[in-house]
Length: 127
Image (cartoon, rainbow, N blue to C red; front, side, top):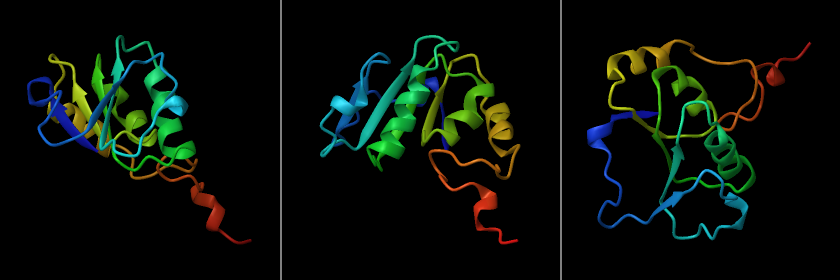
């Protein structure tokens, strides 16, 4: 996952087809063929609907492009963002980039499956 500070975020980069999705929109109703990046917004750190949208985009809709978390993105959300399929996170202006990197590196792996690695780690183990 790439971590960005708020001032590094470019809303509409030239030559990239970006879709900004409201957190109450249903991703299943979108035409995603030409979309290269989807920006999912967190209006508040307590509003997790963008997590569900990212999971839907990755697992059910097979979206392989960039999914970017924007808005009220805090350091402690970073591991879950990565597990739900976000490729980029734009940290809120008062968040420390170094702390976010440490949080992202805290766990080398997970036993459960997620949007990125659907098979649980133990699924390949034979008895």
